[in-house]
Length: 544
Image (cartoon, rainbow, N blue to C red; front, side, top):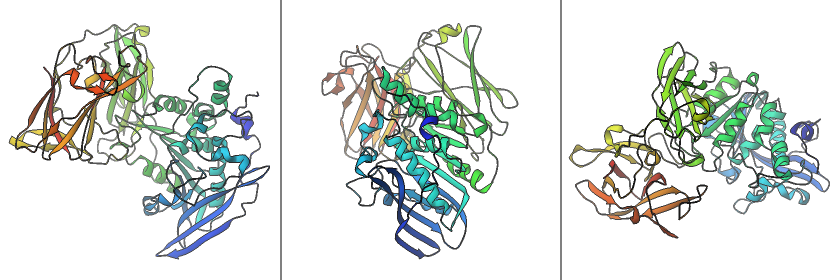
């Protein structure tokens, strides 16, 4: 079977060549907005043509920039809230690409020979005999045909069209950014980085060459903002960071990584997409350069050197070492020192010199305004750089309220600006709390802070409600601990009654159980999550 590169797949493709044959399904104007639903021709095949369903909310009686927003695969077009797009002064164009669905009759209709474009999760990693006929190629073409459709609307300035993809659609948006230079700028949010589970053999090679983001990244010629989270549950953070590194510098692309969250945008990164669109669609402001992060051995210690634009003076360096990879990494904030104008350095203790250590830097303005950009994640084995191990000095105090919020996160896409907060409980004692009733820390799996042997885990907790509170420990390894590629969750759910005092819970390792057995040791634990119906406060976490 032939291996096709992206250049071969898209050679000679013109997304505006064929007629759209637009059918207007509804068209009304109300309160300065024009609302349109329509179908138009997308990809063609031997037994017909795809009829793309699109929903538009336009700024009436004006010519304005447009944002083609492509939602994640599970969200129907009619469910997408475009209020923020309109409030920012942009027309909103929302196409469906995922095809047939049970929860909404308004979707893109693919002919029978193109049924592979109807979303089914297994199809994301399919390797067809002819690589041109695959869901990813069809979805990218659907987006490019939507740009053609948007360009023909009288309310749209065809020279100022942006494309935003969320989740699964982001991979198709990256392909669009590589092929369609009519797009002024693009945003990829949490691209899945899907790949076949079998990473050996010809099929995997064909997939990587034809469909993977790394194959398309060198072709990107327009400014593409890659939005990632450091603990993405599908483990895609590193592969998407690598894809970003392959994008040409002249494209003007940038990377932003929200720390200690999954599939959501962090507090410092919340303004990035709006600023990105404003810069390229309206010409407002300038886009600072990307942070640069390098690593070296300095007298057998690991030293990071950071270079950032001078206006980005709030610098956060995050490192993860010795523990689990992917979604369950503990990203430690490292202390940085300023050494010059836009130059910083940091020396990091290394506890496992023969295990990979990963790091990235975030840079923003100290006043909280402006962009927050990231360096790509770099991963090194310290011993290969001549770095020596730092003796581990364990600390029994995992957390107390004087440490604030920094060690906690909410691994949920529902996280908001004020989800985590410090609350005041009985006797004026403060504790960390989450409005969503869920909070998580990876610190318990850190080499300095993890439990050992017969230690007990003591948690000072306050609950104003009568409720069960579930403590979940994620441990690497299977039930026997001998398969380090597996992770198992162990739970303990005591009942807490309303009280006018803090409650001290003292937990044994054997309190935590899974369906297959009990937890046998603390050393394998990489994450602690606390879930409750009503918010609780955590004042301290201590090994005793």
